Amino acid sequence: MRILKSIIAWRPSPCRLSPLLVLGLLLAIRVNVRGQHVDIELWYDQGQIVVATDTAPGIQGAQFPTSGLFRQFTSNPGFISETDVGKGLGSGDIITYDVTGPLAFWDGSGFAELGVEVAIRIENNGGNDTMVTGASGLQGGDMLLARNLLGEASPSGNFHRHVDYFLEPNDDSSPVSYGAYGLNLRLGTTATDIAKSDPFWILFNYGLDDQAWSDAVSAFSALLNPSIEGDYNSNGVVDAADYTVWKDSFGATDLLAADGNENGIVDRADYTIWKDNFGRSQSGLAGVGVPEPALAIPVLLAYLVLGRRLGGRRLGGLRS
Ligand SMILES: [Ca+2]
Ligand SMILES: [Ca+2]
Image (cartoon, rainbow, N blue to C red; front, top):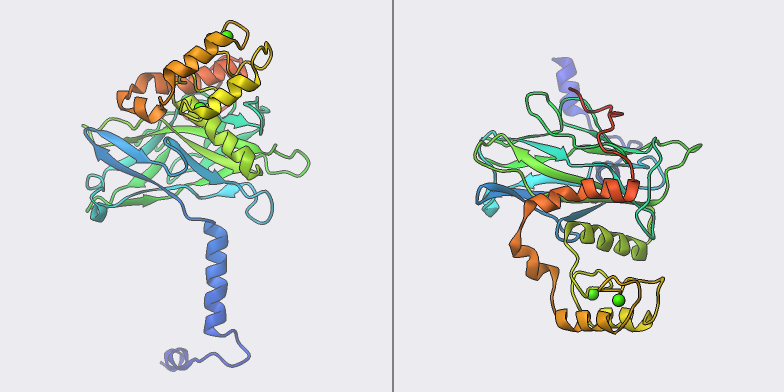
């Protein structure tokens, strides 16, 4: 009883940290640990999981710090669904994710091959970690195998979970290259009548400046969306900037971004393609919504960029 009274009666002495200072320290630590809190929103719509990403359609930006205590680590983005904003999931539904293909890497100027040791390791909410490398293939989520688990919706259908992402190796003697690292995922649910989401990218910026990051987002967007004839700068719309690309490279046989008819030279025919498609955009095509080709993108990437056979099994996180 005396101890209890002494606890109740305890007051910080002037020489101890003031409550305000303690609060400030706690907030600072929280900000440090969480970084900028980012969530991918998910919900059910017309029999399918839908995800909302805020960097670009189908792309959620994220960041690995390049220095400090949390170098090459982040717990963002998380995943959220809220019934009070008209979304939410089914009561108790369990959400998993599939990694649809290898880790993609943009080195600041183009897609590039990754060293065999480079991986994003995901610490899930249950089960083994998931290892995604430049050579790993499809890794499906599975509630029963506790594989790629995000978590369970509350009885009211609310959902909010984070996993931890690590860019590895984290070792000064073999530093990981700066660039944009892309995880291609789709979400699944135990709700029996709900299909998986379309694939989307979580794109991690590791040390790129704003311009290089913007280029990376454009490049990954182009992977998600079929290219549009005449969109010579690959920004998703056939616009005046494409004319500039065509004009500046007219006659070229090496810079072929504006070679719309793919005959090996930027010529008048490519101008005609630009003119005939002027004003078209990816958003204008988005309603077509064909999931299968989108799913094939990581596979294509593996073949085109990495030039190696899929199905490697150097996967710490894939249990069979
Ligand atoms: Ca364009
Ligand atoms: Ca041409």
